[in-house]
Length: 446
Ligand SMILES: [Zn+2]
Ligand SMILES: [Zn+2]
Image (cartoon, rainbow, N blue to C red; front, side, top):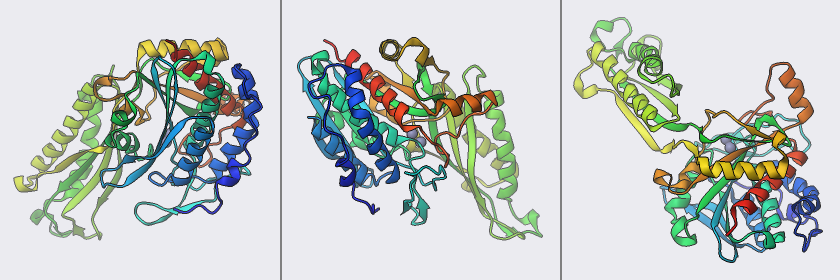
């Protein structure tokens, strides 16, 4: 994907470091905020799809380098051998813990409809070769800009922390193969294994100026599953000679609802969604097969296991009752490459992060949040068995006045993955930089 405007024009807008030598976080943030807002608007206007974060990564790498970090670019390897646009930026500041901070960089195939002056008009080809609009509809531009601000804050407050800050610009979160690509490229062998890992995600469920945090399971695992129900095609007028996979699909969809409602523990919730179904070519032809794409979400490995086995069993049962021969049994494929584990916020680390947030922002601005049902690949950086404690906290991104008005009407403003998702730049970035820097300083102690 090509960008029409060079990113260097944005880099040039960054203000001179007014805070040079400052050790006070508020002074650093005050000195940086207007430049960061300009940087954010530039990134927002030039979004790049997953696997194509070339200019965003280059901008982030350049900014982190200017802050004194040692930066390595093009980190990450996809299963097809392609090199990713991940970046790793390291600043060593004496003995102490090694802290990983992650910001994801990719945008979504959505035509922006916010109407803001800095709205994206970018078009690009998706993986299927179709032209799509591109928008930072998940606010990863907020994450990248917050990381730039955090890097400057850490560089300016080196007297307040000890250890190693390892900043990761992660590609391809939306396609959930970015964190895996970093590990496949030996991230920790090359740059050392962190002791702890943190990240933030902006949200429409909270107003700008606030942050939110959940202890324990915070976001569900997401498992992608393909189901193909195979039958025997034939003339629509002679169903007795066929095995109709469309009827089987109907039964499968209805029966599947009982996996969650009757086989799964109601105290350990799960979700199954069939988002895509294809079968048939013409009204009077019984097709040979119906293909479905499913996602299953769960907070525990046990719920995930029950759901996946339930999907498999339901498909087999439906085929059996339709009299489908064994050699045409349903094909149920779990796509590991498109699946993510639970986003688990380590309770002990969550308590430390929460305390740092309260100290920085005030207790009234730190909200204890219920677990959400979206998914994230950040947890993958915590490794199998949750070897590295991880925490992701929420960053309120909505205009406080609009947020309050919507809330009074019992509504929420448009959120991530919506063409009208509109973070309010100034207070969101100010809070993001202050929150992430304060947490980093609190965790980077001997
Ligand atoms: Zn997203
Ligand atoms: Zn996101």
